Image (cartoon, rainbow, N blue to C red; front, side):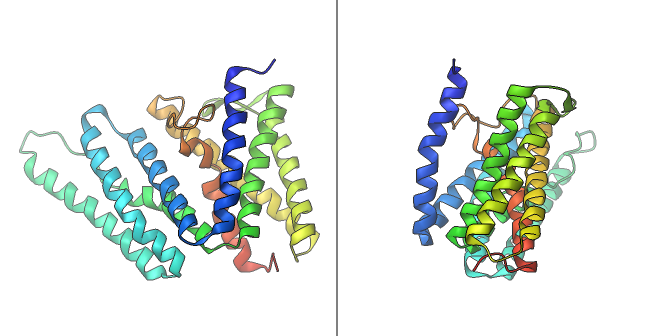
Length: 272
C-alpha cells in the first residue's frame, strides 16, 4: 500500500514534470521567470538554516537583498555578461562587510561580537549562480541535466527503500544507504548513455563518465544540504512541495550537477 507521503511525492512530480517541460520548451522570459522564482525561493529557504533566533530579522533582510540581486545575476547569465555577474557578487560581499562594520561600530565595549560576515555572497553563488546556467542551455541539454538528477534521486530512493542495508554516512544523513547510492549511480549512468546515444554526438565513454560525474555531484549536493538541515535542526528546508519538502530539498543535487555539466559541455561537444 502506498503511504500518504509517497502519494504526495507522486502527485507533486506528476504536476511538476509537464510544467517544467512546457517552460523549458517556451524558453525566453518564461524560463527566466521560473528560474528566478526557484532561485528566490531557494535563497529564502537557505539563509534561515544558519540563523539564530535573534538574527531572524537580519536573515529576512539578507533574503530580500539576495532576491533583488538575483535579478541582475540571472540577467548576466542570460546575456552572457560575466562581468555583471561578478560585479553583483562583489557588491553582495561588500554589502555584508559594511553591515558587519556598522554592527561592530555600534556594539559598544561590552557588546557581543556580531559574528563573521559571509552569508549573502556564498548564498548567491550556491543558488542563483548555479541555476543561471540553465538560461544558457538548449532544451535538449536542460532535459538531459534535469532527467539525470531525477533518475539518480529516483533510483536511490527506491533501491534504498527496497534493499535497505548499511548506511553511508549516518552522522550527516541517517537514511541514505549504499544500496540506494549504487542503485542511483547505475540508473543514472544507464540513462545518460541512452540519452546521449539518441540525441548526443559524443562517444559512449564520454556519456558513461558524465553519468558518473553527474550522479556523484548530485549525491554530494544532497549530502551537503542534509548537513545544513542537521546543523539547523530541521527535517526539510520548507513545506512548499507536498511530499518533497522545500524547493531546496528538490534542487540540492541539481545545483552541483549543473556546474559539472557546464564544465563538461565546455570541454566536449556533447549535443548537436
